[in-house]
Length: 370
Ligand SMILES: *Cc1c(COP(=O)(O)O)cnc(C)c1O
Image (cartoon, rainbow, N blue to C red; front, side, top):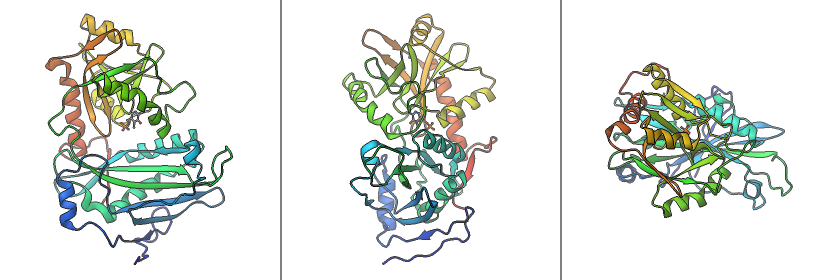
């Protein structure tokens, strides 16, 4: 049985939400067991959000429904031409039990930029944030309270029009699902090894590298498998001789005199973790350089001792020191406490803000459960 009840009317967007409670929701005991050891991306909350878009009607029919399979026509455009985009952010539980998220306006703006590149409709920021609040209104019990755990929020949008011609779809769906996430490093943060991919590129100029779209990930899977074979956890992609990023994380180099250098390129995904880490570094009076950065500069800087460390950053893992870069014919190694010190202290400052352990002087947090 389903019950259709508008949860709040009118909502800030002016749309009336249809809320259908999951009659088969996990019991308190079942949920507690999952939250004991949530892993990443394997368990999902009891509900999901979806909205429809059509070229005639715009965004309409916002719903909260029981989490479950989506029915799609086999001719749905996304299954053939990959017209799809997504986002990733987290909900954090603070010590007083309240639930917050981090810079969701940035995720909303990035989803809009991705939408423009993939010829999808833009979801207004207000509706994006409303979707997060509506899901949390029914599923906030799924936000873990253990240290360094969170509820990972995955908004996504795809072309659902059943049509095999090649053009932008006139019917689109937006969904939001959520998955409790354990600490990314259950045994403590440890430096990773990365593989330098020279036979595969992640993106090219004028391509979709700056959009958060599934196709970029599909093309990174083969080089990622190559990295695993070489005993590395991640791949670093280049554009010619210039450093781009990992498959799903941005890269930063640290110099002996405390500068942070990160590549600038129109085919890199603009990470919100990166932007936030760079702001925290500037607040400390450190110099931040965002510019073209060649692999040779890293190699020579590491050899001369000018570059003392490197790290990767993104929402899922926050900040991860890079201990080793392996390439076909050379290796760069960063070891010792000085190679990870700055990365680890920026990581701690950022997570302290996210979990409410330190004052949010930038106004980055948005409350989701009130
Ligand atoms: C999502 C993503 C990142 C990191 O972005 P955050 O906003 O920090 O999570 C970096 N690179 C790619 C390719 C991504 O998809």
